[in-house]
Length: 336
Image 1 (cartoon, one colour):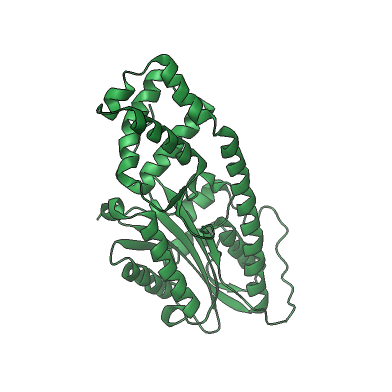
Image 2: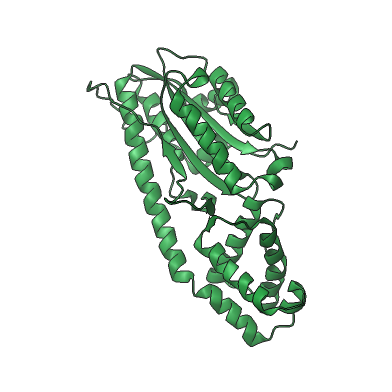
């Protein structure tokens, strides 16, 4: 039996997705299959909403939910499911299986989109680095307090993100002298809805990266009316950890320091990783155009053509998966 946290929308949708994925690849025995349905159908009904676009696997699960609702009559969900025959249970399993090919298409589409996002964002960051003798890089992760997660819907999350993006576009206050940014949206069982933000400031105009990070976090708290919080990577302690491992790519980055440039590009690449499939947004608000999960700013080059020579040694500043886990993917749940 898989174990679930069903206390908030992001966790429930992740649990449902994981259940269907496991069923398609490994498969439960009939007893466990029904036991999971008995737990997950009521859970998704609590957090289901109008105006939501679901990923393929959650859509497949909802087909089963509708099937059960249309047939159970006055019986409770568990009472109905536990009296099904083996043939009826097989029909439910086959209903999920019919979505397998569409699911595989979705996996390929996600990885292709992330690769395109990564290529475009790295080229965008490289242009900024080329244009400026020094830039100030700030990395922040945003999430929601654990006590508030049960009240946060995907519409709330996207509304908060839109408010943040408006501030990024205006470039006032703590966003003054901002040259560019990258913003990635994700969800998970433990972290709920969360975002990763990379800010690139003009290093000739801005310094004290830790102060700017705290100011931006305060803006997020204001946007979310106190239920959101942020974690800064730009503390003295964190930057020392990066520097000790030859991975410092935040804070002040100089164009003539090739290792700093390489590491800054590694920080940028983390925001758009095809390998982060399990943390993708599983549900999004419906819109005329598909809702995006990655955003970057607009940058106009100076027209100068500076060449940056990156270090060729494979042993210098190489990021392992453990480095990424330790240094960039911060724990995002605060117990308050």
